[in-house]
Length: 233
Ligand code: 6GU
Image (cartoon, rainbow, N blue to C red; front, top):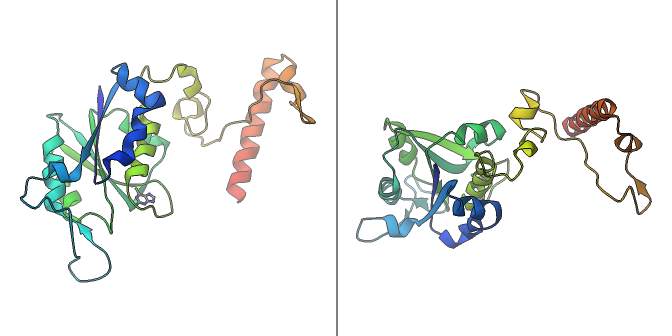
């Protein structure tokens, strides 16, 4: 079973992880999500989590002592622990990474705030044979901290785990899915449901035809058109 551990100074910020699909998956024992307060996991007397940057400059940097204590505390005895350090300077998250993460035993998310986490934390765990370190960003913009980014990644990974989705067929055709989309990066075709006419807008005739071959061709060409339009932006 995949175990997700998140470390944050705002653990309440992560409470949506109890809801909906992820809440049900935890109840069914398909995955585990543990949320930790960085401050509670520190073992030094001051429980301090940040300090001024060496070399000067604005803001505060998160202490390697606090992070090292916290990460050690929650590490399992798995052969490989994936340590995800959330930072806008990381590698951009994508569906391929979601698939890779879905094979993990334990993923620890270090949700940094302020100007970031002391750079030695990543370096130290890279040197430990039972850890694989990933510095990850979720896109080209700056957030106040890694909490929301960690939730994005967990949501993308959890739905790939066996039993989490009610209907596993929905993985097959969706945008960016590896299973249905192979190496091509097509976005999904547009979807319609009843009524056939709504506020003057009609469902494309072909979808009402019952001709599955023609419908498949139409969907493919719509997916290609949408993908081209996105690329042109
Ligand atoms: Cl992972 N963290 C922060 N602070 N900002 C981000 C991000 C992560 N990904 C995109 N922007």
